[in-house]
Length: 506
Image (cartoon, rainbow, N blue to C red):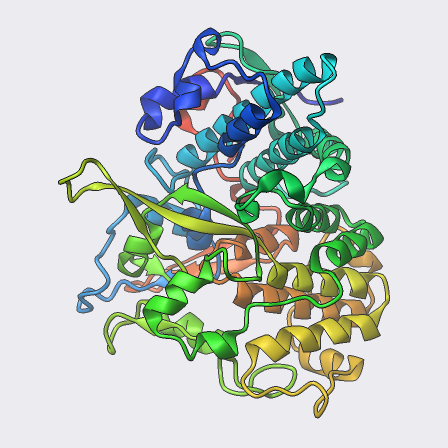
């Protein structure tokens, strides 16, 4: 029997919870908003359909990319600088509500969904008058699908056909809010995914790059939309569809982020270029409110030399090459490291003010991730030679002085190197051969390095049911996140629970 759960109108919480971050659109009563009566006006509204929050801080803190850096002698690590950081590290319910918290991400995501729904309502009215808004409709549907996709993958268990019909998903909101307290059902993971698929597959053919003028990388272009489709199909195990979408996203001559060039840059330029529209690898960027770029090196639980050494040891990869990635410390003796991926931008409170709100550009989709996704899908489809070609493409941009002509990657090399890795546990594990397991481990391994300090590792931990252990610095006490652990689903906000929504079980 399908379980149903009640969810409340979430945008109504915005003003009280994070009014400084709410955009003007949602601060207005619907009847008082500007009339959306042209395709251009719809496009302006859709700027608000992308989330202005990210989940990087807490998803990264929950992953195996972090350790307890609690050496109080280190001036660059402040004990318990942030309670939410500690709660995330130990997979506790995070009770903070400010930026970078699950609460903030939840609210911002539903805020973006509200904008998409109002855009779709306006589009329906315009189309009834014979006005073509197909490109705007495609973008609105993709935005609605993407925001729900992120919500269900943060606040629910990962999609698994064996449990999807009974695992709690999220409320899939498809109607514009007309009252302060509308009610919606929190549906199952399966139903959430079914609705995401419907929006994605309806919207994808409508996307037109011509609609975005001079700012395509802040919108769902064809390439970004296909990257999203690739990720979605990968999550549900539809390999050929994932491959087809990846091919469309990457084109014939994909350009990846070249870390051999990045390490030649100054720290400031590397930080600036990473999330720049000029970086060809970035397919979709979103401006998000976040302190992570400013505070990342000062959290007690974070990226450390311990993790860095395990990930980037000399000659520790399938071609015995040296990784080109570079982490940096604020102090030569510091355990705290950063990849310097995030350049913070301060939106000042006033002309002469030194305070304000920090923003970062969040790369929602990149060619680098799509290549990793395609390696995985090709392997699951049994197309190993093509997967090896993508592995060569990836390593050419990530390993120093690697030459794929002089040292081509073979299936045997991949199998030999990755046989030492622990088995993964996706829902299709029993259908995987040892060869497929090796190649998928390769894709997961690459993705971990590439998305380091971007929060992406957490979703692979969930998807592949990877067991991880967090250890306390001083006592050595450990906490294990077991397979199908209930804590893999981040708890929904307390404010939402207070309105009668059933929380995730613990």
